[in-house]
Every structure is written in structure tokens, then in C-alpha cells.
Image 1 (cartoon, each protein chain N blue to C red):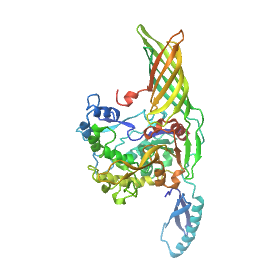
Image 2: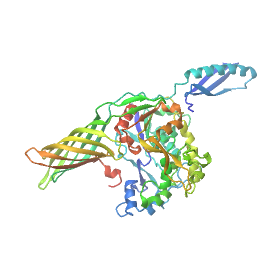
Image 3: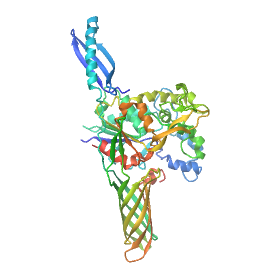
Image 4: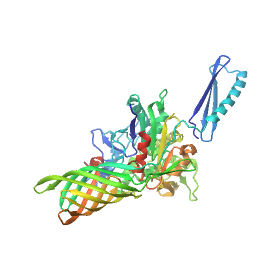
Amino acid sequence: MPNSGLLVPGTGGITLMDNKGNDLGYPVKMRLGVLTKGVLAGLPADELVALLSMAHVPGQWAPFRTSLKEGVSIRPGHVLQVAYNQIPSSYNVFLYDWRADLRWNAQELIDFLVHRKPQDARWNLVGHSQGALIIILASKLLPAPLRWDDLVASVTLVGAPIAGTVNAAAALLNGDQMGEAGVDAFRKILRTWPALYQMLPAWPVLVDDAGSPVPLEQQITRAAGWAGVEGIDADLLLRARETQPLLRDPFATMGDIRVSVLLGRNRNTAVNLLAADPLTSKPAKSQLGDTLVPHDQTLAWLGGHFAQFVITHPSPCNVHAMLCNDPGITTRIKSLALN
Amino acid sequence: MIMSPELTVAGWFDGRMMRMRANVDSTVGRPVRVRASTGASFGHSMRRQAGALTACVLLLAGLVAGSAAQVPPDIAPQYKSRFLAVGNLALVGWAKTTTAGFVYQHSLTPSRIEVMPAGNRVETSPRWYLHLLATSGTRLRSDGVELAGFGQLGLARRNDHPTFTTIALVGQGIYNPRAYGPAARVEIMDNIGLQTGWVFYRGGGSTLFISADYLRDILSDLGLK
């Protein structure tokens, strides 16, 4: 039996549904609702705060509540074809709540890989963005005596923010990109999502006026790094500090399989933020990347051995969110993951 | 620091099993951690033997270092292509036409691959593609519905613009009414194609042509349907 393909999409690449099966319309319909105060579609911003906010209990990876709205829970819906229209339809899709703790979703992925493993065959995994991190974490959290290379034949990571991304900090600061009308509401919402904290940069991202990194205790995964910013959750920052070491040596427990990392390198991508009070998302320094993953910074953080698995895609190449529509990227994915 | 390969050497000493393990830093080709353990007590003489064995392990570890457990991608230049099932709405003059079909684009040249000093491969994808679109469906008339179809062949160029990912110049043929002509095409994020052109009827005369093709089910994908 041939190996089976499995796509693990990225942040926002899967719709969110409520417990009655209604598509919440994140982000397009939701943005329309925010802009029109719910007149045209969706809901006004203030009604979304309770709906989309999460609650977590310190020390527990699983979400305590997936929605703070009374009687509502949120679960993943379907993959957005607009972002994955070149991934073969024969591929399975791992659906997960991309707001939740990465390690929780990694455990869910392990369950999926084990219980739906094709008979006498293995998985070819393709992970985009946050999906790549979940694959890496699943390989690290796989309980003995299970072996990753018994389950998985190949891993292809696309636009993988293994060292983190400044965009996660920008999202926590600016409340995503819901426009002026939604800034306050989405700041509150996004600051309850562990995944965003866990994708904060692992390198010393905050620099002073001279461009030198500020001390570790004042960096962005510490409370002191968020001077003048309210609502940053200390427990979720701790989750970031716990998760980043697991991503440092990404293939250490993957065994004897084929591994590839496809990274874009043709667009300005933020690398540093100015340590300020209050902290803002204005980049102090940028370099080439895919708008979310800074290419050289990621390779530098992961060390020289990592580079041999990287296939760099310069211009022409799509922006981060649309990498899995780009023919340069997806033709390569097919040759790597389908053989 | 990468510590992927783990070398295990085992042997019998004084009737007791001794196992030594070395995690190998395959970046620099030297072992970074050595641990020795036995199934029973570990005497002074055993320590000397373990020292000799450690040296062997280090030597072996040095020999195998550099070959990571994972296999790096072995890639060759390749032609790039994309296929997309689409719906299409068109105005030929004032006649509304609804069709469905596919877009296929195939690069004119293969990609180029270079190896960087850091060890990563750089794959530069081609910009120019052969563009093909074929759809069929129905045309609404005041007196009913009739079969209709479109075909396009042209050259497409991929851009770095975040929204307008591809532009193209195409020649197109239309069935019902039978017409042909040139058109300019722009693609939005590889999901929507917009084109406008001028078509010449086979029996004489000409008119403006406007059409949009789009990823099927795009509205439900965006939560708008």
C-alpha cells in the first residue's frame, strides 16, 4: 500500500466552527462584520470578544474553555482551499484549533498518526507555518515505545517559523489585522491564544536604540519585555519559554526519514523590535524572508546542520500565507512528499 | 547543536553486560556526550577497560559523524506547474455565460538550483509559464439556455506582488457565439483570474469581453455562503 499524505495547515488555515456547526467565518466574514458592525455579515467586534477568547489553566496543555461565551465551544471546521489549492485532493488534512497550545495539538496529531496510520504504509507529512511546528513537537512528544520513523516516511515543512516570528508579537500588540474598528476587541482576544505566544521569536528580538539586544530578562518571552502593554498573560509567556527549547533541534527524534524545509527568501520580514515603553510593532530591523519567517535569522538560530535540509526559494515566490499555492513551492512539495 | 545520531556499543566484561552510548554532534563531526553504564557494579579494573572502550567509541563516533539520521532532500531542477479547477462568469457583449473547467500553467524552463556555503540549496523558480484555460457551461439567452465554452492559450508571468500574483496575455476562442480575440489576464492570489479583451465574431463585428474565473467553492471557503 502506498504511503498516505497528510497536510497540517497553518494559523488561520482552518475554519472555526461553534458547537452548533456554524462557520464563524474567520477571518473574511468576521472582518466584514467588524467593519460594518454586524450589518452586512458576521458580528460586531465587541460581541466577538467572549466568542473567540480562550481560557487555560496553568500547567494544563488542553484548553479549559475554547470560548468564553455561555454555552458555546469552538472546534476546527474545514481547511481553507484558498490557501491550499495546490495540495493534492488525495491528501488527508489534520484539523486542529490553531489558537490552542502547540503541544496540545501535537498530542492530538500523534493520536491521528497512530490511529489512522495506513496499513503497511506510513505518512508523508506536509506542515505549513504553525503546522510545521506541530509536526516537530509531535515527533518530540511521541511516547515510547512508539517510533516516529515507524509512523512517518517523510516530513516536508513549508514556511516553518521554527525560531518564531515577529509577526506573532505584532498580532499580540495590534490585534491581528481586523482594521481600526476591531483593534481593541482583537487585542483582548488574541492575548488569550497560547499559540501566538509560543510563536514569539526565540532569538533576542528586542533591541535598544543602538541595535544591541536588551538583556534576556527583558526579552519578549518575559513579562518585562511587554512594558506598557496590558493583558499579556504570564502563564502563556511561560508556555512559550517551555516550547521553544523543544523546537531547537527539530529533527532529533525523527529517526531515519526524509526531511525537507522550504523557506521563502524574497520579501521584507521583521527581525527586531525596538524595546520601548510602550512596546510597538514597528520593526527596528528587517531581512529577507516570506513576510513571516526571516530566512537567515531562522537558519542562524537553528545552526549549521539544519541548513542542509533547507531549500530556499527566492523571487518569484508567494507571501507566507499563500506558499502552498505557489507552483514553485508546490511542485517541489509533490516531488518530495509523493515519491 | 544537533545531536541526532546515537551510537551504541555493547560488550561483555567479566560476565557483565556493559553498554556505552555516544550522542554525536554531526555538525562538527565529534561526539558531545558519552555515557557508560553496566548492568551491575562497576569496579576499578572495569573503569580502565571502559576508558579504552570510550576511546574506541569516540573514534567510531568520529567516523560516523556527518551522516545524519535524516536524509536531506536530493533535488534536481524541475519544471513547475499548477492546475486549478475553476468556475467562470463571463460577459460577451451583454450575454451572460456560466461555465466550469480548469486552468493549467506549465513553466517554460526548469528551475535552477545552487548550493550555498551554509549548506542550503537555493531553488529559483521560473517566471514564465504557458497558460491554458478550458471551460464549458451554459449561456443565458432571453429565449432559453444554450451550450457555451471558452478556451485560452497564452503566456503568463509570475510576479512578486502579494495580491496580483500572475499577469498574462492570452488568445481566446469562444463557442456560442463563435468568436476569438486577445485578452489580458491578472490573477489574484492564485485563486481568482480576471480578464478583459476584445473578441471578433466569426460572422463579422466585435465586442468587449469580460470574465472572471475563480476557485470553485471560494465563497463557502471564506464563510460567505
